[in-house]
Image (cartoon, rainbow, N blue to C red; front, side, top):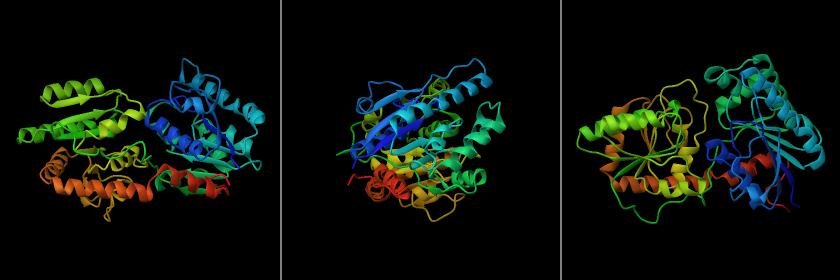
Amino acid sequence: MSLRIAMVCTDPGIPFFGTKGASIHLQSVLKVLLDAGHQVHVLTPRPGPLSHPLAGLVQLHPLPAVKGEDAAERERSIQRSDAAISAVLDRLLPDLVYERYSLWGRTCTQWAGERVPSILEVNAPLVQEQLRHRELVDVAGAESVAHDALLAARLVTCVSEPVAQWARSVAPEANIVVLPNGVDPERIAPAEGRHDGPFTVGFLGTLKPWHGVDTLLDAAALAAAAGNPWHVLMVGDGPLRADLEAAAARLGLDVEFTGALAASDVADQLNRMDVACAPYPVQEDDYFSPLKVYEYLAAGLPVVASAVGQIPEILGSDGDTNNAGEAELGVLVPPSDPAALAAAVTHLRNDPERRAALGRAARQRVLERHTWNAVVEQALEHVGLELEPA
């Protein structure tokens, strides 16, 4: 029997049907649930573009829009929006609630309580993240919300062990498991043949400081100076774009910026790449489960990435995160090291057979371990449900 599922995201910074990484994550989980034959109701204050193909396959329940000229009023507005969930769920009476943890979201899991299974997906220690990178007025309130939401959920899924450690510190009695992110191998698949054009090194993601894209440009400049120029393909948009465009012009680099793309258009851009990069800098925030790396692997691309966080494990390295070098699915380099990044890419450029072998292994690893279907199936099993209706 198919389930009636309430899928909830109260974070006003995430357009449910948008193009951000978090949006793609939500859409990927949604697609798995829909493909399995379940009826999904989406609750969010920020739906995003309703022209998205998935938007017409769900019943949308818009929550009150978030407003506020200052941080304190905005925090109160988000909480009022979250509180509206209760009345919606009273009408829906879902069989399952599936929520992406948001800074002020606690109504969903508390409504579920012992009535229906609830899954709370935690992608970051949001209280710490908000304090470090943005502004948080009511710190005690946010900590209380996190505790209540985690404790009330039937299951808390965390994308990495560092995130799980944070969750355990907030709510030691919560039922917490680690389920890293995944990828849709049907949406992203390898190209049938090599693309036409110059040797291309690519990056996929939001152009923000903690993605280290400036290191990629510095590496490209070093390679060009050594007589090995690349075409750099930046797939995505973000606040650093203007600065990166200026840096590329100053360095005389061949760099292409695609801007923000719909998820359906990403595969075509990945298929233009010969090598894909995740050049994360040295940073304290190593709790992430990088969607871009899974998408690189699904596209059958060799990956050059910084040896931080989950990346060594994803690429099949037995070493710790402080070591760099060859991995099963790519090459690990020290973070914030343009020379090491340039050398790794140049080595792969000169060894097409190695690139092809890494790409084949990458695709196979995704199919075996990292599909969204497997992630959602495991989450449902933990609360006593099956993904495929009986």
